[in-house]
Amino acid sequence: MASVGFLYPGHSAEDDYPRLETLLGGTVRLPLVHTDIGEDAHRVDALLEMGSAGRLAAGVDELKERGAEAVVWACTSASFVFGWEGARVQVRELSATAGLPASSTSFAFAHAVQALGARRVAIAATYPDDVAERFHAFLKSAGAEVVSTRGSGIITAAEVGTWGAEEVLALARAGDHPDAEVVLLPDTALHTAEHLPALEAELRKPVLTANQVTAWEGLRLLDRTISCPALGTLFSRTAHS
Image (cartoon, rainbow, N blue to C red; front, top):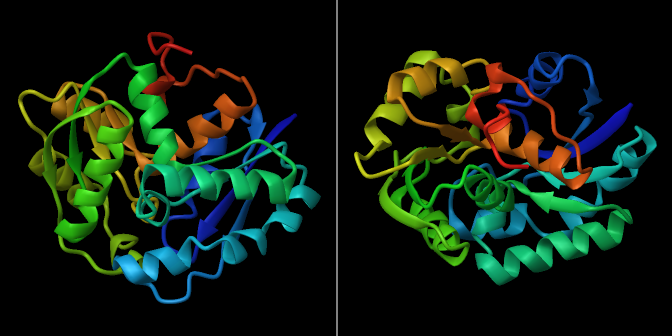
């Protein structure tokens, strides 16, 4: 059975991954290893340390022992905070350390937007505004037109991890924009695996969330396509592979 390994920072919404595995029908294994995050803070200096090569490398051997055939750094903020080129270096170093194909959640968002054939996006972020703006810049580097960016001022992943369906839906509604073809919720600390049908029904457009696109990116690295309408338009047959 195919296996994608995830390096996940700390503890917040990691239980989305067993849910994703179940929703994908048990056709792929999604082992997860926690990384040491240092300080839990959506602050640039803390995020640069959180995504440092040494912290990511520490979890690679365990993922390989668990059969991972590809590895994804399951964190948005501690990848895009490095900028487009810095995030590419981060992924290259991770791939070299693991000896496996590698990516990150930030690149997962960029690739997922492209797979949907979308160009205009809205960002509905949990982060403080300055961090959300860095994601805006990252997506512009990927060729997307960001029509709106909304931050929520949340500092810690621990707080984000307590949000339920009501808060997630409110975040998406607040961050939507009439010109956006797709709405992005970029935080792997946010529980979203069970909420994608409700999010897309509410906004009447595709919604991309961090844990959803991270799993999709891992499958993309293995050249696997799995249809799963419960995980939104990205996992439907209408999405481009």
